[in-house]
Length: 218
Image 1 (spheres, rainbow, N blue to C red):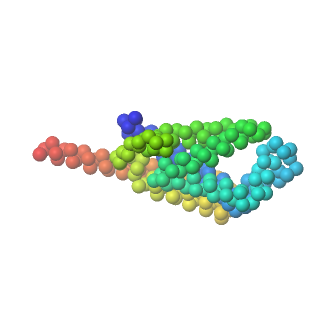
Image 2: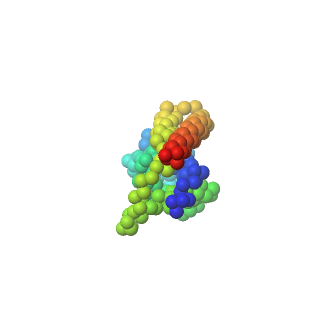
Image 3: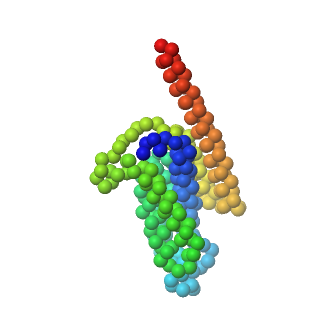
């Protein structure tokens, strides 16, 4: 499978999938950590089997509501750092599978179950990608490959931390039109990261080409 993982476009897909679902978790975690409702609706008067009533019940627990927020924040952060993405995806899977089951169990979530299903599918893809190392969790010896693939470049860790900071900042500072501002900043940061990542890749390839050329001349 290593020859497949060497494909640059596939590594980029994995990198940005981590950013996408990780930042979505971070974005939605802040209101919980702040002890605020996930929606502006007070769901106490809604039917007990409705999504609004369910969110209201969790919100009223207080500490548990904030605990959920911190769990999402930590899972999202670990995933976005790239360096700790393997630990992040394990935590993310536990949380995301729970969320998905909730959305298909309670009537009224409609399109939300599709979104959570796609996020769970993306999480499973990330687990498959890192399975060479994660399989140790079921007592199978891991393949500790230490090669420096494109996805291991330092730039992706930097981009992840910038995205995390922007996501938290937009929510905490209550920036007007926060969703739009957040989306624009994330897109801009992602494009900048792609530019520097590809530039570093080109520089490394050129360096290796020169080394091979010198060796052939010798």
